[in-house]
Image (tube, rainbow, N blue to C red; front, side):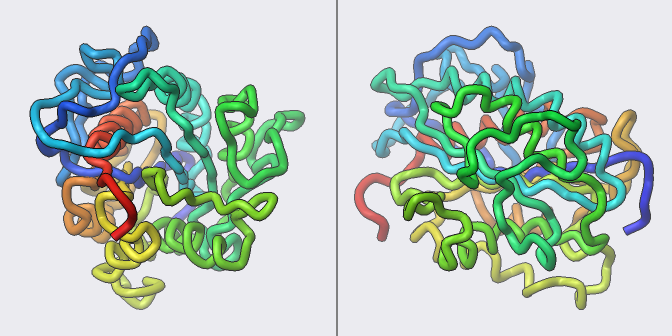
Length: 323
């Protein structure tokens, strides 16, 4: 892709269009952050909420009507950050917004009043260099002296300054490949890098069977860059089934993309290409997929929609063992 001053973040968070909510959804908790007061301006099969991230019950969403589901107590969240030459502003914006994101998940309470057990990891869109490896140190573009936290390839609530640690890791710089493959990087991160023990710690995998896998991809281009299909790592239509293999079934993972619904120039974030392939991916994911626009010039809307979708996916988390 061409180098530009503006950065574009494409966030694919595990999630989908909000279907009917459920009575046994996660609830409780109180948050006064005001992180997002609406569902945002996202497009394509996305989640929306008239009450913003924090619903009237104090959970991530508004709660719901009918249905029997297993209580969701855990989330394994992966951010894939575009680190190509045009991404500095988006990475800065993500670092600025992330404290609000963490506050919401820190305040999240399950229906039984428990805190959410979450893991947070970050990798780049460069599937040739990083190959889905989760970052454990200071990102190339992060300020000197920032602290990346423990050497484990993910962060947890017990680590203390999760906001600061993640912001330090997630500012990945702009020296990555101009052929962005955030979706492929996400898949590598939760498949091959688990199998070869790269994304494990002390013998434990990042992925937990009883946790919702939530993926966040940040990019200002489409998967594979421009329109040349030869730049794709694999056919786009195969990705949903690949993630199904990782988690066992569709209801156990969610995906959110923050990218360009069309070619646009965003105030403060620069240019973004139309992400046709990533929109198509979200369209095939079903109710656990959401596409949000980067064209608003701020990541707040996209992160709000991602969290709202995660909340619903958590409410709908399948009960019992993996099928």
